Image (tube, rainbow, N blue to C red):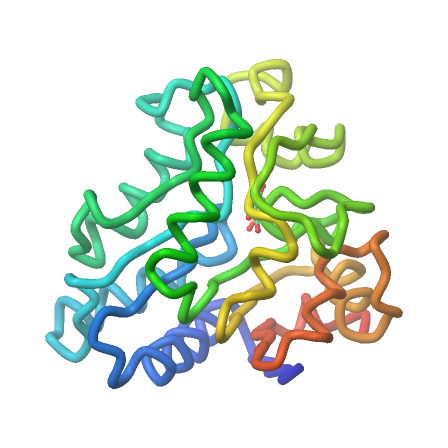
Length: 241
Ligand code: GLP
C-alpha cells in the first residue's frame, strides 16, 4: 500500500489525477471503476481539466460505478446514475452507453447484480478503481463486517451511512435503506486502486485502513492486500496516523 500525504484537498485531486493518468497511459480501451461521494470530485474535476486541455482522452473508455441506491428512480438527482453522469460522464466526455451503474430498480436485484459482475469480467476487469472511504471504513457500500470475498449484491445501509448521506436528500428519512454495491472481492480484482480521502472526519477510518489489522470491522483495510493500491490523503485525513 502506497500512502501519499498532500498539504490540502486540492493537491489530493492533482496527485490522484496524475496516478490515474499514469495507469491509463498506453491502455487503448481503459476500464475505469468509478466512486461517487464528495471525495473524488476534485480528482474528477482535475481529469476533466486535462480532457479539456487535450492531454487526456478517455472518450473510448468504459466505466463501472461502484454502487447505487436500491429503489431510487435513476432520474432522481441523487441517484448514483445521475451523479456519475453529472460528475464523470459529461465532464470527461465519456460515452454514456459505455458507463454502467448497478441497477437499483431491477425486478430481481440479485440477478441484475450478478449480471453486473459478469459484465465487468466480460471486458477483462477494471484497470483503475477510484475509491473513497466512508467515515465507518466502508468501501463502495460495503459496510463493516461485509465479507472480504463478497461480489456485487444487495446490502442494507447502516444508520451511520444514512446519516452521512442525508445532506444529499431533503430529509434523513428520504435516504434509501438498501443499496446494490460491488463486493469487496469484486473491488480487489481491479488492477490498480486509488483511494482519496480528505478532512478530519475521515482520520479514524484512514488510520484503521492503513495501520489497523486487516479486519472486517474496517472493510477498507482489505486494501492492505491489494497488489497496487495508492492512498492519497490530505494532512487532516492523515492526522490519526
Ligand atoms: C458514499 C459512497 C462511497 C463513498 C463514501 C464516502 O456513500 N457509497 O463510495 O466513498 O460514501 O463519501 P464521501 O466521499 O462523500 O465522504
